[in-house]
Length: 221
Ligand SMILES: Nc1nc2c(c(=O)[nH]1)N[C@H]1C(S)=C(S)[C@@H](COP(=O)(O)O)O[C@H]1N2
Ligand SMILES: [Mo]
Image 1 (tube, rainbow, N blue to C red):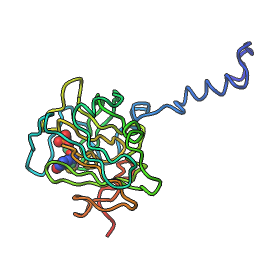
Image 2: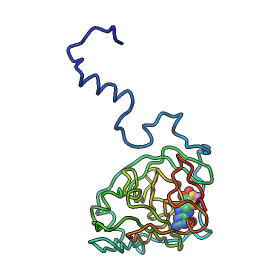
Image 3: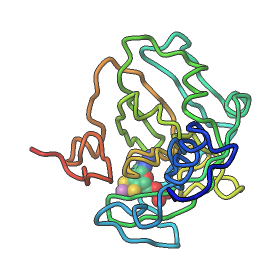
Image 4: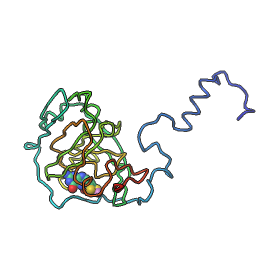
């Protein structure tokens, strides 16, 4: 490299930019990770998509579906199906990592990025966490900073088709950088809180945050 003739465009800036490109610097999303680092510790790959829930799969039609936004936001709104579709729609590809050790690569989601959703509901400065509640009574908590991750998305389609009821349709959350129990199926309510509070699995021995890259599977106490 050092012996290569100096090209006209070989300025310090272009060299730096080329180096960033080789390293994948500033690229967003897990898909930019080299494959060897893509699978978190203790996980194995599956190609099917397992179904996990508390034993009931609520059948919620798009006509009946609502999303209540409560707590520390300036716009206390209830979204219906058309209200959700009226928000900017985004497509994202991401990997699933379930705490039961399966991972599934390259899921294509369509829905509303949590960043666009946050623009619409306008959280108050005191908001630090969210509690998600679902039509089956399930709850799970997230720090607002995790909910607002750039690849987090409120989805209604998977691989270009309507999200099926068994996978949380009509609407679920997907937070790819945390274990999949944080990705509430059959999403019905988002409450903005000043402090993080434990949801269902978090009250039952699971970690408050659930980062698969550092194996935050269970709570410490
Ligand atoms: N409403 C609701 N959401 C839920 C659950 C649930 O029981 N109820 N289970 C969680 C768990 S533990 C996992 S691993 C994923 C499973 O999603 P899947 O069935 O689409 O794979 O949903 C999460 N979201
Ligand atoms: Mo899970």
